[in-house]
Image (tube, rainbow, N blue to C red; front, side, top):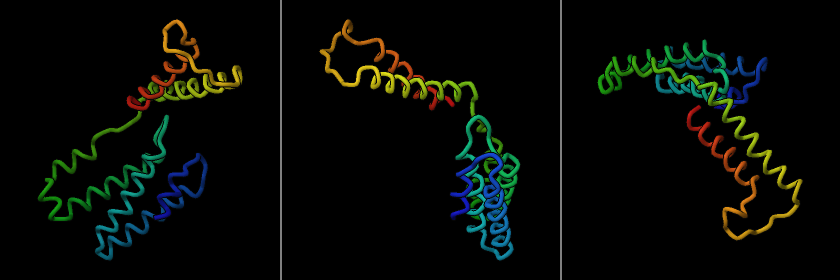
Amino acid sequence: MHFGRSIKWFLPLNPYVKKSINMLFAIGEKLEREGKNKKALFAYRTVRSSLFACRSFYTPGKVYIETAEKKIENLLLRDKTIANNLGKTFIEKAFNIKTDTNIIWTILMELGLLGWVGTVITYILKNGEIRVYQFSLKIIPYGVIIFLLFYLLWIVGMLKA
């Protein structure tokens, strides 16, 4: 659905995000009334996953995510085959798992990215050419070490955030 793609282009005060969310909820509710639970489930999951896809320091639309999770949980519990296979307690516990981002690691990840890109740009502007050195610890410039440290900080930040 294109509404999910529209949600992923989240910017604060963007009116189209809320319109897309409301349209997906309306589509899901209409499909539920028609008895097309799998398609309704897809609409609610699209709202939830699209909002989680654009989170960073904060999760936008937490109210919408909670509403979508309740609707998904109700649909899953209503479906006999899924409820029998997974069990009611498993489905309820699955939505109680908190997946908030760690703000400190997110900031460190951003600093790592900026430092990593900054060292590359500085190296290009300062030297203007790439030189090939023989591998020796005495020859490695400090810029390469700083570059690797920022790159490592960026990678670890992505894993921990």
